[in-house]
Amino acid sequence: MELLTAAQMRAIEQAAIKSGDVTGLELMERAGQGVVDAIFEEWPVLDRRGASPSRSPGYLGPDEEDPLRAVVLCGPGNNGGDGFVVARLLQKQGWAVEVFLCGDPEKLPPDARVNYERWGAKNEVRVSAVDSAPLADDFLRVPKGIDLVVDGVFGTGLTRPFAGAFSMLANAPVRDLLRDRGVKVVSIDAPSGLCADSGRILGQAIVADMTVTFHSKKLGHVLGDGPVTCGAVRTKSIGLETLEDGQIVHTTEADEVKLSKGSVGHKYSHGHALILSGGAGKTGAARLAARGALRVGAGLVTLGVPPSAQMEVASQITALMLQRVDGADGLSETLEDTRLNALCLGPALGFERARALVPMALAARRATVLDADALSAFAEDPGALIAQLHDECVLTPHGGEFARLFPDIAAQMNEQLANGPAFSKVDATRAAAKRAGCVVLFKGPDTVIAAPNGRCVVNSAVYERAAPWLATAGSGDVLAGFIAGLLARGLAPMQAAETAAWLHVECARQFGPGLIAEDLPEQVPEVFRKLNI
Ligand SMILES: NC(=O)C1=CN([C@@H]2O[C@H](COP(=O)(O)OP(=O)(O)OC[C@H]3O[C@@H](n4cnc5c(N)ncnc54)[C@H](O)[C@@H]3O)[C@@H](O)[C@H]2O)[C@@H](O)CC1
Ligand SMILES: Nc1ncnc2c1ncn2[C@@H]1O[C@H](COP(=O)(O)OP(=O)(O)O)[C@@H](O)[C@H]1O
Ligand SMILES: [K+]
Image 1 (cartoon, rainbow, N blue to C red):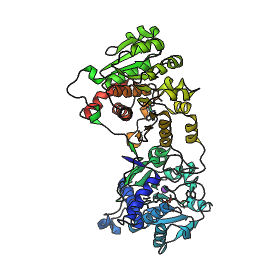
Image 2 (cartoon, rainbow, N blue to C red; image 1 turned 90 degrees about the vertical axis):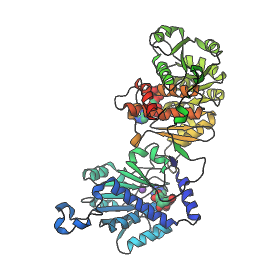
Image 3 (cartoon, helix red, strand yellow; image 1 turned 180 degrees about the vertical axis):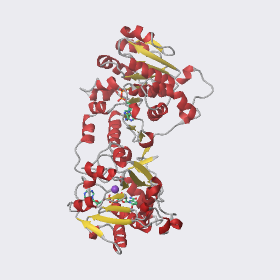
């Protein structure tokens, strides 16, 4: 699935208009119709179409006599234009609709202006200046008895913090009032205040029950605060074609071909992963990673342990192998076995051991996952680590580790916003991958994975794919192991990172509530079975 920026969406729309296939006004009509369809699909109780034969007054129940009531808030751009279409279409279905416009009608863009006039020809529009708040009092009196609020204030054109006339709808007390009264809030394209490119809130944002977007989801729907402000996201086609654009970000997907093993081959044809462990009492994380590497199908997996931890690890493992790896020289000796084709360093490795082993591992130029301590150990001089990285590496930082390695990029992503569109987690991960010269997987419910060539995907664990039980100690270690196992199997770094991230969330969803990190590798067989692998 594609995740677009506002600029990419505009380019797609402009290409369609330029080709003469469709006009902007037609697109706006389709968008408004899409919103109304989505409202009826989401809340059938609001859909009184088709009820007409029995709707003679004698058949109506006491609650049904009143028309359904909507308040539509329109902003100064085309998002507002969509709002006027929605108002007209709901009115056509017998709804009582009240429309507010925030902005100067004279300055509406042409298509929005046409729809403003169509509505205004027979109905009142209550107008307020964009940056003033006189409507707040008016609006607060409205909610009693209304069923629906439609947010058409700002969509993909949001460029400044959301304030003024309608932003009181973003305030928690107003929101609670609406919720208590059962009023549904629908945002057109994006909740006003949410940056469609970054999922960051500019000023404050409306919290919707449902957001209806067009053609494809935007990045802001899945990144950052997007999921908490959008409610559910429904995507409606408005008859646009997809553009060829290598910069478009996609979501991760199942890849049966890359995951299946051919019917021939022995264990060495599926690679041999080496997972480096920390010292005594600190070996659990590496064992989790190793178990993950084995379950995703690496032919062999060896744990490289310091002498102090040999007994501990030996008593805990069966199918895994154990090799004593004592310091950089020990690693150098171990790596003389060139069948060790994928390395994983980081989970509970310890900073001192990480500083000793990471340079040796990187010098060996094998496919290498660097996670946790293998990243944080270089916080004082990230440049020294970055200088040693090569294009077979995958870095898997969480937010804290990312900020230690790429402090300036993290600062840009977290800075207070005066203007939009905001620098996003996608922008940050792309910049980091470029600087590191290797794949960077930036964790979270919105995991972003980028390669130095600009390819970027989001492994989205929100909405219907939510996996909150992944927020458990050790789940990141298993992810590092999944990646190492797939690298051992010969997947390219970007493929391995994308596939592992997808699988990680599927395993969590397969297990469900109560998940702990140990459970993740054990779900792999069932997830594979469902993929017919
Ligand atoms: N691009 C497309 O393909 C389509 C776009 N459509 C609609 O058009 C929307 C985009 O329209 P626009 O580009 O006109 O953008 P918007 O309608 O989102 O808003 C832009 C206007 O708001 C002003 N503005 C931005 N942030 C502000 C703030 N914080 N306070 C006050 N004013 C602010 C801008 O100066 C501009 O006048 C989409 O979200 C969608 O709803 C649909 O009609 C169908 C197709
Ligand atoms: N709420 C969440 N929803 C989905 N995935 C999550 C969530 N919280 C964390 N994760 C995922 O769980 C893993 C946690 O990794 P990490 O932060 O390194 O923890 P640890 O070091 O304890 O293993 C990452 O893959 C991250 O993307
Ligand atoms: K909106």
